Image (tube, rainbow, N blue to C red; front, side):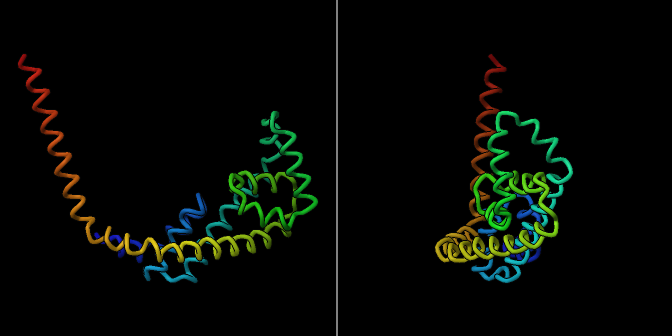
Length: 188
């Protein structure tokens, strides 16, 4: 089981799934994998953008369908919600694209946009543009970061089997010591 083969075989699927759920970390790792030559840069950008689009589209649709009812439950944040919805109505282009880059808004942003009743014909193209820009920026950062982390990953891959054996041996020694201690207590 070689980690490089796993990345080459399942990397793009993992990027799509990971970017639906999370985002930046997966995207940066995809850029590192592209730098290492395990994945192709344009396909990493496409996979991450696709996952990001799917995730935000689903959250938008949830907000469109259930948003007003859900938002009523957050009474103490109503001022912030109302302010965000006014911003969405005044600057939909900036808000839809910018939400993807605002820390902490990855999940709530598309739901707020859906709850604000921004039409799908406006959200969808902006979601696509935002996802592509986001994927390109973060994949590029990961690619550049791969220059720094690349040698470390190569060493890790070279020594991974050795470390696994060291860990297994250490766990075995600790387990035997605990068992002997337990056995001695039982005899007393």
